[in-house]
Length: 353
Length: 242
Image 1 (tube, each protein chain N blue to C red):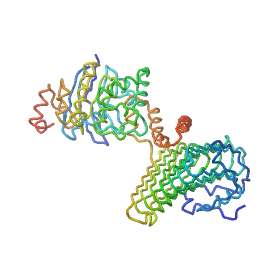
Image 2: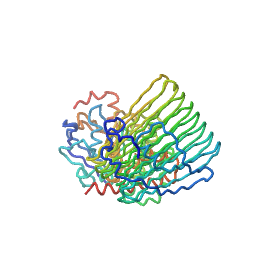
Image 3: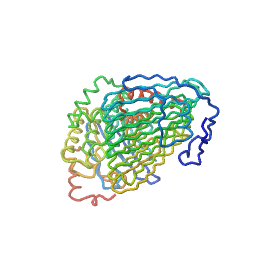
Image 4: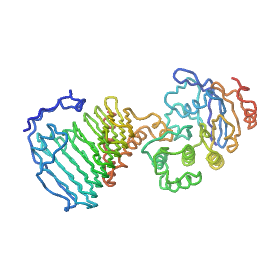
């Protein structure tokens, strides 16, 4: 196994996390059960290791145990669609899926990766995603965490966009015990752009943990991030986001919005936005909120004759709708909406007991 | 014929008494204007009638056809037939106008099979772009669009009584006329009883009141016919000190 040490919550990037609860040695590596559906022209099974910018004990562990799914999109190949479903069914197992997307010049590809585990499975999933978009390539990627509330996930994502490329990176997280996604998005060619959205909803004793970096290396790059989450029961969530603008990235625009709803007294959410700007002539903004359902919104709906429980449900679903409306896959967005509805109904039932 | 009866209503906000004994009786089809200077308690009166949190009724009663409204939570007051058109309509992100109306109809036990057609018809009648009905409530709407939306909802929910809280604030002439006339029509077609809370007489040119009441320091100090609004325009509120 890897020689790197486990991090601790002393490190800023692991602050608030549950890393101290992890006993990595308690999990033994197993092969993933993975189903891949999609355009055969762009799928390559490969053992080639891609080198990540930010290596740590988890990316190393992934590298040692993974069998990468490589999606290599030829130049100007458009309309490529790939769906990857991983099922993790053994308790005590360590799973290390790795997906590499190499989008050639002016190509277009849409990838959905779903993480599924059965109820009660105490597994550890350490996924890695590595996305490279060549000049003018358009990549859309959506990760869906449908893990059971007993499965751990520590995910690492890196994405890099060359000149005039577009990256659309989304996460929907409903499952997991402790589920973390770290996303490093770098715009290295001028005119590159990225949109990042996330919907996360925890209940019970779940914890969702997101760390994002929007890194602008080249001039006139554009990034827009919208992360919206809710915590019910005794669940927790953390969002830490950094906008980093390099000295040569003049004329860039970067936006970051994180909004959190606390749906119960015992739930806890933390939001930490950061800016690191090394040049003038940029437009940047960040906004973050943590709080209960807005009283005025609730009153407005109730004043139309809508019962409090229904009014709350509408406000929460409306809160998430803003993210779902931005997902590239409309069919999947509708399915995920139904899952959010079901989860909300279940957490209300538990909450009223 | 329905009656909304407000008797000796007193209410506090953050421990401070704002309504100091309001009395008002409104019957179906009547239009009552409540006029008052800033700080007279106009918005508090609207909020208290609808049961907004943070407003405490310390004495008095509000009855709709003999039923005690103050004992009900907000949503039940609405279902019972009371409606509030808000001065600053709240934005509700992600909740679409048609979805809101559908839930409101369901709460009233109304079949929603005719809903889509009714919404389009009412939207067109009030010059509200019907496409906005499938968008989030009041989000990214202009001031005029918000008030048209509020008035459209009033028309679709057909309450027995409505409080219009400063319907005229921030409205251009066209939007004001459209909204005022739609409310006036509702008083004729659906026998709506309207309480029009306003600072200015401008609104009353299109929405003609049967009664005008002057509100000063939390209670009505003078009541009369439409001529009272004219007197107010000429003399100002200073002539009506509480």
